[in-house]
Image 1 (cartoon, rainbow, N blue to C red):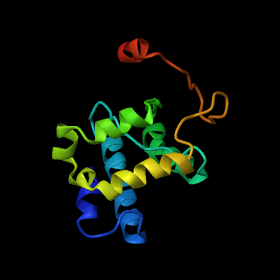
Image 2: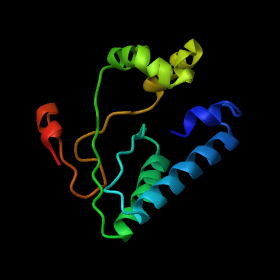
Image 3: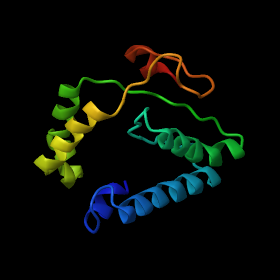
Length: 141
């Protein structure tokens, strides 16, 4: 929700970009946690080899936990080919103009070679993590 508007002004990954996107996400999460809304589904591209990503997720979860809320983590897995195809789909391109940038797509593909974007069983440091098949995940609540 925050990335596209910020990209109009600042390059992806620049200090200003990171401050604005992270700040917006944190404030949005705090406001939802403090509201009467039933919850929030929030997506996050987690580089498991980057300790800062786990710290960010812990920070995002804190406002809900402080209010007795439940936080669930769900890992969606797909091949690199499926992820590229998804980013090239008409609905994705319509909603996210940055996905139309071929250089950006190359950056995403290259990042998958450099970073670990899939969890390794037994290495997550979150309570109550479990693996679900796609059918079970669809029914999980």
